[in-house]
Amino acid sequence: MTSSYRNIPSVTDILMYSEVDDLVRRHSHDSIVYLIREYLDEIRYSIAMGKPEPLSGVDLVEEFVKRVNFRLRRFPHPVINATGVILHTNLGRSPLSTEATEAIMDASMGYSDLELDLADGRRGSRQTHIENLLRQITGCEAALVMNNNAGGLLLALSAVTSGREVVLSRGESVEIGGGFRIPSVMEQSGANLVEIGTTNRTYISDYERVINTSTGALLKVHASNFRITGFTSEASLGDMVELGTRYGIPVIHDLGSGCLIDTSLYGLPHEVTPQESVGLGSDIVLFSGDKLLGGPQAGIILGKTHLIAEMASHPLARALRIDKVSLAALTATLMHYVNNEAIQKVPIWRMILMPIEDIKARAQAWQNEIGAVSNVVEGVSTIGGGSLPEETLRTWLLAIDSKGIKGGITNFVDRIRRLPYPLIARVERDNILFDPRTVSPHDDHILLDIIKDATDVL
Image (cartoon, rainbow, N blue to C red; front, side, top):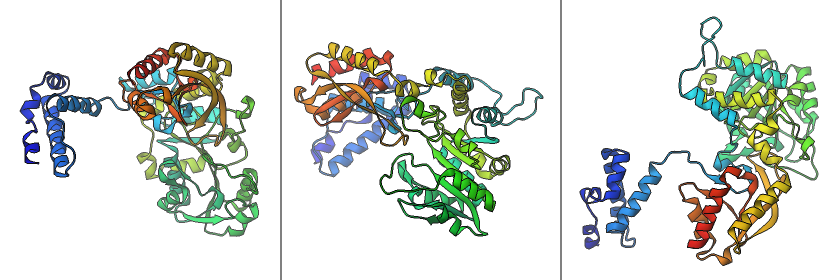
């Protein structure tokens, strides 16, 4: 073990390599020295734990350079999503339209009128312009935009129901990604959860039975990422609004995904839209900006004027408010809906509605380039992101049989995932699959070069 420690190079030794000198020129001497010391400490710890003999010499430096390039890379890093999952949570969910990305550049590269009223030169609100767009699109009385939908729900409950009871069906007491649970948010807000009904059946009479002078709201949560089927029953939103109106209790509707388009027009199951919820009389409607709306991460709150005013004046509203970059992207995305061009301009809708013939033609073109190790197979894409649960879209896939690849599936997917422009595929059984639906046509040549290089090497 002593000899192993003696073989560890010094910081000065590592700095003498030309590859490391290049890192110093690109970054800074102090930052690279810090990372060298961190790396050498890890090697010493590895020796102390009795692990295999560490790398030495050129191999050690090569590994160090790889680690530094990864550590100091730009983040988040662009990837090619060939998984066929359109709203891939791990890959940043919704890609933005050209207009939205241009709006981000304009808002971030200089100053803006974020909180200045250009008409009179006085301080304005970052919410005014986007509120007007949301009122036009959805017919709501007022609106507020936060940094995400979880924050929007926390704000709504804290401002409107803190210290009071909120009635929720057991079948809607859900958990979404990252361990986010509705009951936990309710507890944090200071509201008291009252669960009614059973997991699979809840009636409007269950809501009415528990209403009392402490009831602060009736909450309906859309099942965005799961579906209960079979012997089921749920109270309709219309019935809940009628009950809330009769007792003077607000109805809060958490739509989760928030689709502004009638999905049934395109052969998909109908998804309740914010417009429909507002039209039915919901007092507060909440949904995300980065799911089926197709914009940046944001939490959108629609509602009655007096309730939105309560939320806007609550201390959490400042803590959870949307930043200028996301606001610019969301505004540009909403303009696609104002202009009736979302189907053509919003990337996720182009993917969802991509003609199956176009997908098959691209998959076959890929296969012609890749050759014998691949073939074209029929499969399914998924919408993902907690939207339209269990719904799939017919697609065509480029499939590579792992039996014909040296090193197998793990080596192949690891190699293409660790490239400067990573390629993310999906694996099913013994096939590595690439779905054209979620790959920009501009990236086709890059994808093909990556696959050809990986199949030649492995």
